[in-house]
Length: 258
Image 1: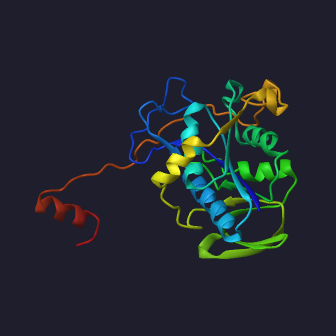
Image 2 (image 1 turned 120 degrees about the vertical axis):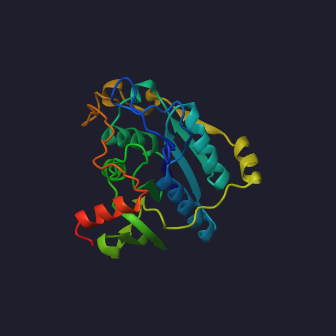
Image 3 (image 1 turned 90 degrees about the vertical axis):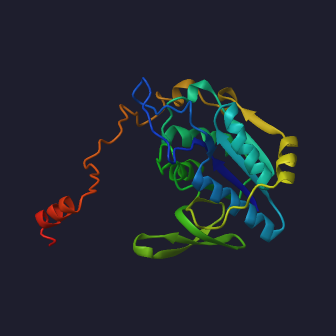
């Protein structure tokens, strides 16, 4: 079972003060730490678990990003991925979900695979569309919000998360693409031994010229959507601290609570 997992190196914005940069279209990331996208961590873990259960196959992690993104690929290798591919070119700047899926398609279309995993969405842009578009490029069936996977020879049975706590069970023919939801497993910690082994593994780097794409097919010119402006929502309510019993009573009386 050969599995390709698309991962992304994203800024950790949990608890951080978010600021918009001078262009008005991006957040400032200079002071933010970066890490593997949350949904992608579950995806790479599920791929490794499947390989371990079957006792055969390979797991390849692929990302679009600059040199810094290699930290996320090294993490995937340390967990147990067999290969890692980084795709980068300055022309990719400004790519939307469609262009990103196009880049990934050209990078993996000639690789052997039975399954392709993506995270359901990313922490930063949150498109939630790359997986579905990529499956159309690859012309293979796909399922989203996957919470459980069972391999059945040339078929897979998956449980999809629906609204209201419901789940849908589907059968798909292989090869197939799945977008992975959090909670499908418990991602393992990266061991010291895994980190040492990961440092010795080779990372393949692919540029635009090797993808049979032109600069016009990626980036802003190759995208269907463009970000015009980012803004931080303005607070609609203000917290008022009441440290006087009389004031508390007045507020409660005004709201008809006493």
